[in-house]
Image 1 (cartoon, rainbow, N blue to C red):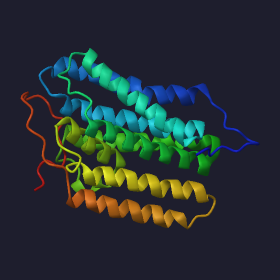
Image 2: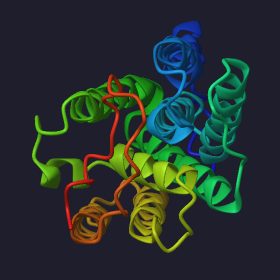
Image 3: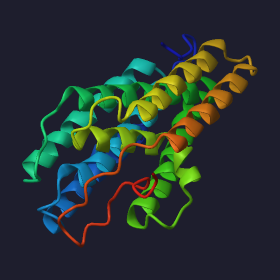
Length: 249
């Protein structure tokens, strides 16, 4: 999907691509380096899951919006995800192999976030990447707050966030669960990718937004009422990154 105008191609400011690198790889990799030093006995599920998901989100949405092409956002998101997995291993964190469920979670999340970036490009042109930056920053701030203090935010708010869906699916795969365990989160990511693409294809028609928001609310309800299984408790008392839905039955 190429959302750029042939007569007015998007500029590619250096700042946009520096932001892609920062949000999608550099900041998550730095977080892995810091957390690996302080929580060396923690399994990758507690640190790598959120870090990988946020990196994929940052890279996919901002790159898709900066370039204007859906597939560029998807490829960059997948690339950053694989690079972050490599960083986790390099930093000596207990490593889980890239299983089929992890690969599917990575690809589905990349597609969903790439579709959102393409929509920002389509609706806002060369300024779409700025919108993408604010969206990524907002969602990341919310989920990081919840990860630091699981009681700080209501569960229904987290269930509304695609970033949290990606975290849930990634953590579930790292914990060794099968695809059924992360099925609601993966379905939410896939469904919103399709609905978002419909809006992009039919732009500037505005009625498809109703389809997109209806889909978003429906899959959010699914994620809320069908959360992923609780994660096993870490063996380090200082680790605060846990599944925000772990207390739900």
